[in-house]
Image 1 (cartoon, rainbow, N blue to C red):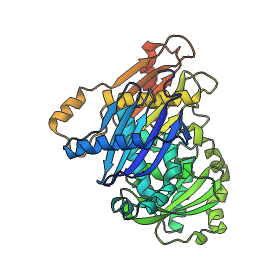
Image 2 (cartoon, helix red, strand yellow; image 1 turned 45 degrees about the vertical axis):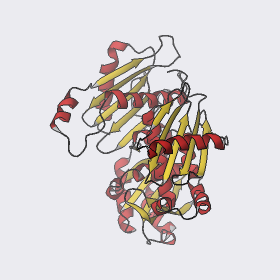
Image 3 (cartoon, helix red, strand yellow; image 1 turned 90 degrees about the horizontal axis):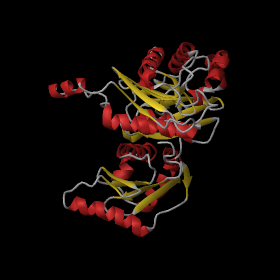
Length: 416
């Protein structure tokens, strides 16, 4: 698993299902967006084979060649998304979730009605340009993982209770139920209303902020793909510190001008130091004083019921492998354990035989990389109730101690 994804190319195609007309094509190589475009003949062939299957009532969802994985997905019989990936670590699960996030981002910024009732192709192409930045961030080597886990990327603030109290007071003062603090695309604290947002908007809104260029304030129209796909809301943002933004999701009120400096100073000036402590969490996710075993190079902690996650690879930055490779290793491992070993989160109503089968599923698994130093690491995953922990460990970490180390780490992180 050591070199996976380092030079692979990803192409994302969006077409109007009825006509096959391309709406956009986005590409990346090695996690860096590029301007490389696929020939029109290739686009036509990929869409043609999908339409041919549909005409025969055959649903073509994925295919593999010697070096490329292709996944097709149609939305509302109106939009067809196709992704081609030559990255070795690419899996169907990962690419399917990528397409779901891309369509969610399109709805977020354009609205579902524009995508399902296409009256003017050229106008829709222009409107979809607003989604390019967030879509490119899905194709890039991101520090976030919510696009894959479909859980909200969060951080743990050392002064979380103080920030939460101030956030609740500010929300009441502005008569807004949906308020959050976001640092570099990760949620620091949020009101109960914000946490009740459905998927995928709960993941997409912080991700959108992380993909936009810095601005002191914004008044941004957004649609909620789950909660309000046809009626726009307003996303107001105020930069408290570089990288740290206060976000409000609201209707016509309050106007941005009402959030004057006096309101901000009342609630946030007294918390300047706790706010400053949040800025480094945009990369590390955990407070600097939080102690973990020195063998841990990266971790992913998921709460499957709350749909929140902690993801960081900046725990022992002076060790090999490099940070981008650590992220790829943990993403690949998450895909492996989710698709092959651990069950997805339980649904609202399960059959009795499904529950019996669930008790027979594994609670832990591990992958041991090469024994030579600096060539990868060991990976261990542990499932306990609604909690799932994935760890990337030093190659020198003894195999016989992996489960004990993971159990101890999970117990230490669970109260957070």
